[in-house]
Amino acid sequence: MKSSAVDDELTIGELADRFGLATHVLRHWESMGLLAPGRAAGGQRRYGKADLMRVAVVLMGKEAGIGLRELSVVLATGDPMDRADLLRRHVAELDQRIARAQAAKDLIEEALECPLSFEECPRARERISARIPPTGT
Image 1 (spheres, rainbow, N blue to C red):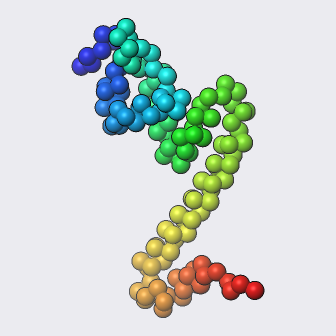
Image 2: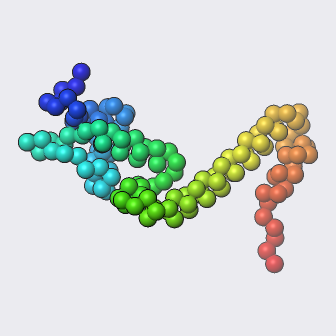
Image 3: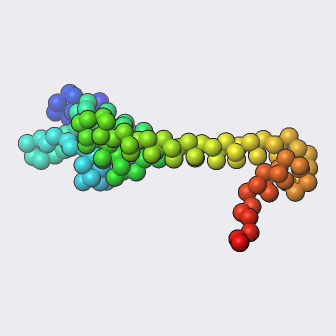
């Protein structure tokens, strides 16, 4: 049961516990403008439903590889089109990371299927050779 005086509000400790975060993480996010909690009479932070949503969005952004500075830009704008370029760049970066991860997965799956060593397995050897940079001219 919550210890908050108001049913819809959480203390910083309660919010941190709910998401499995340290309280200093939430304070840091506040210092970056990612969170703007209300304050109780004694100055204690109080987090509401909008703050729960904001923490979830920040965590999802971080999981997608978006840095906190970029997230603060994305979340600060009122016009979704203001963030389109930043998000498009990030989608391109994610596409590259996904392609590299897929290539790594394919190599591992081929290694599992081939009874030979990497050096002897024709498909693995082909992929390994493709990864070697050409000589400089």
